[in-house]
Image (tube, rainbow, N blue to C red; front, side, top):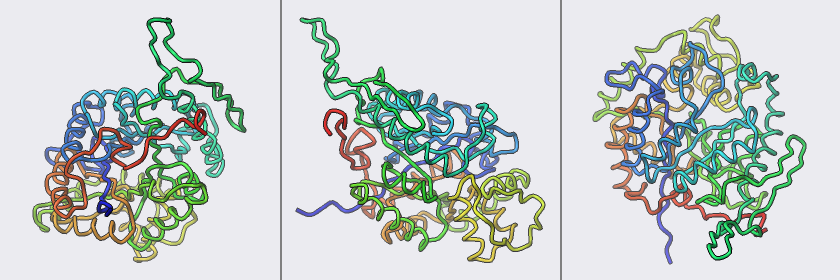
Length: 437
């Protein structure tokens, strides 16, 4: 029996003011990330395009000079709970920090979202890299490797809490008056280095069995955590050969944890600037770049690299720099590109202003599809996390112009084959490990 052809997975990274740092200034673009109507429209576009999931990131400190959607935004789980009522198929993913949260609260919140959405929840497990978040929690920000030590146990506790209920625990027996079968609910009784959690949750086993785990770490501890626990990894890329090497390295770690590499989807972030012609696409990108505020872009670049670059000569070549203690992924990829291509600080500034350090492609629908197909078939990814430069028009362009090309080539679904995110990703529904070890 022949297998079905491999197809891409597609997510959309939602920032209401656009993924481009000045996307909100583009004519007709959404002006706010505090507008539920904007996010509901993005949800409708995503389902029209048969996307696997919508993803909302988060930040735990706000500064006026940041990207507009970083400085002013709703708490993402609250927004996704509202979005669950106006969508039916697309997955709903959000960030919740393992550094500034408790496992019990995270487990309960995402279990609730999975129930509310009929099996579409996904948790992006991150170790908050921003030091300024610590000031909002009365804490001292942990060093990079220490954050991952906590994250390893945190993720295990969350998954354990999701397993405290077996399927069929709620019986609603009118004859005996028993609502729950106590033999199908257990405490977790976790006692570890960082957490002591009794359990169970006051939330029954979810439609997906366990919500999907998303991750984006690219440091050594981050890759180890992803190989052991993640269902989807968001990657930062700029170069095809580097992306292929990173993809292979991550997948090769999984058998050591008893996992099939095909059960993990690697989705690089990419900002497509789409036009009906190459010239139209280039004009759109030039217009967006003309709107970039120098202070905002320099602030973003400094944050990505972990060093204040505002005083550096813009036309000087970027030197070798140590990786910051904050986020390794963006810094490693951006510095490698800068050294490889002999980029100046001005070049790196423009790259960050465009897509915050993510990969940017610009062109007509066929050429965009050609590039995505090349990366997919070369073994660099399992699909893409699409970062429209502005909403809703930039996302409309991708869904209406590029997705049909991918569908015609047999690279992407024409219809959903299921209703849960696990089904979109081709993953089995797991049984509770507490009841079925």
